[in-house]
Image 1 (cartoon, helix red, strand yellow):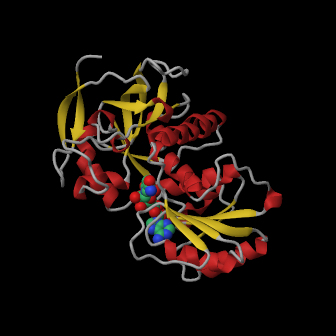
Image 2 (cartoon, helix red, strand yellow):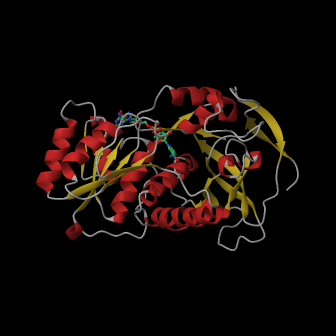
Image 3 (cartoon, helix red, strand yellow):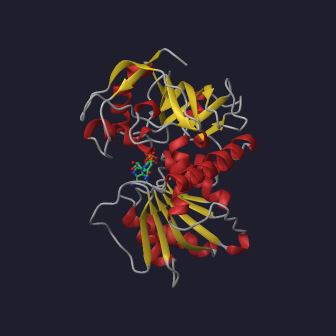
Length: 345
Ligand SMILES: NC(=O)c1ccc[n+]([C@@H]2O[C@H](COP(=O)([O-])OP(=O)(O)OC[C@H]3O[C@@H](n4cnc5c(N)ncnc54)[C@H](OP(=O)(O)O)[C@@H]3O)[C@@H](O)[C@H]2O)c1
């Protein structure tokens, strides 16, 4: 494909982002070129814009990871039913491609590795679909990070429970759905206005994290339900201490495991016989591709086709397209509640 397209670039550390025309790339053998219709924003995007963390390998950079759109072109080795014109969601991240700006989401045409591209059913809008990629990858990677295979299928007799601290976040909603699909009984925390929605996504019980007795009420419920709770995903900053306070009372003699989505501070709370690990996919490209294939081609694609995976949170569509991105990132930085900021492109 020859020509140019509109892109949002980060010219240097500290931003702001600006608009530029970039040459539209050809997909490599295992790549797919996406004509982007919608993008979703994540905390990592304003962090990279504002402070260059996680490190941006080179400038000018194209940030972002969440896209939906139409397949414009496929590489020579892409032998799936992903064809030009297909509606898709795509994990398009320059972060995992040595900073290559052709692979960032925030532009009209973006390259993605084929394993991170999943068909989007016609009944799901591009804006709804765009909320999925990074949250799907993070929520599923949390399980493998703490040694839980994505093939796990607990039955009610196993009585395996999990705590998701921060259930109303983007990652939290996919954490609830993925935990349910592995067979866990799911306990979550969120503001009361989100409780019913999170139960529809698969949470068994949801607790208000702002209430002073949240830990004791969680522990009481887990004990009266007679389940085994020694696994948790702490999705939001500030959630680790209460997560450990719950596990202290519920884990018994079993070694507990906590996946932690935010970067773990050097000094963080700990608990005896408890492993706490930062959620991160393998840095080995072959391992990572296999994992992304499992997440997108099996879990997400199958779930969207059957309706068992619900795109969540609902998109909060902001105006302005690519031109509105700086403002939309500022809005995300000031906080969202049970929604995901999306821009139509
Ligand atoms: N490790 C990775 O690869 C990776 C990838 C993606 C994201 N992350 C990190 O994961 C975290 C979540 O990202 P996100 O995009 O999912 O966040 P988000 O959607 O912006 O999170 C907002 C939600 O967090 C909830 N929340 C805030 N403080 C809370 C607390 N103390 N207890 C319980 N809930 C709380 C709020 O719930 P209410 O509305 O109910 O108040 C709100 O709905 C961020 O730190 C992000 O950087 C890591």
